Image 1 (cartoon, rainbow, N blue to C red):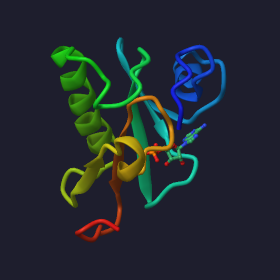
Image 2: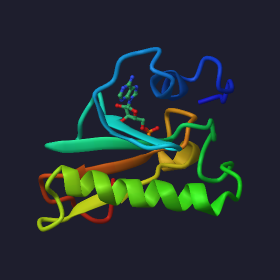
Image 3: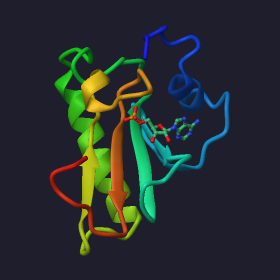
Image 4: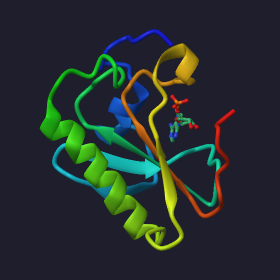
Length: 118
Ligand code: AMP
């Protein structure tokens, strides 16, 4: 999972509208779209439009990082998950299971999720 920058980044390309995605939320700085390989009835990825490789290497723009969390909450609300509950996950780096080097939050819902994660 080598970061090759914004140019060829698949999530940057989705944010720029260059490749199709099933968008569920669009804000000034944040976009959310359905995961291609959903791990539950609801599985949405929330990303910054700006290329940040990961949470750990995502800088210190607390307004943007906060906007991602608020967008995750809004997505959960739009997906009807507010009452049943949902999980928000950020995989970071190799041990965290991150496969796409563009910061993203997974919003998962529609079924119970176990703990601890695998
Ligand atoms: P992670 O393993 O945390 O890096 O998650 C990357 C996620 O991106 C996986 O759940 C993939 O299924 C998802 N994914 C990869 N490419 C696309 C795409 N073009 N559109 C939607 N989801 C994607």
